[in-house]
Image (cartoon, rainbow, N blue to C red):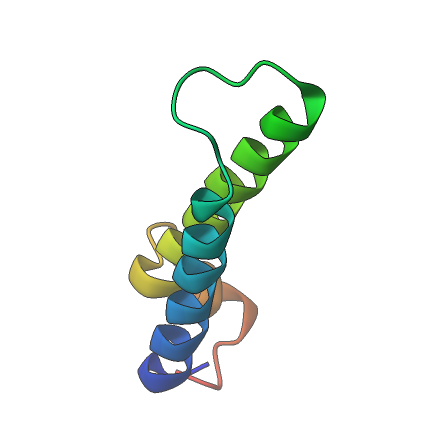
Length: 67
């Protein structure tokens, strides 16, 4: 996966996190639904960081011929 593809996928995950964050109420989540939405935001941001910055060289190890 080249840098351009990683930036596109990372941007899509940031968009998912932003859309889900809009649906959250300000304050501490009080229902299971709000906790699930918060979890989705956190996972989407984590995936965006993995795709954009590749902190553990995941893409280089899984697809060495693509780099």
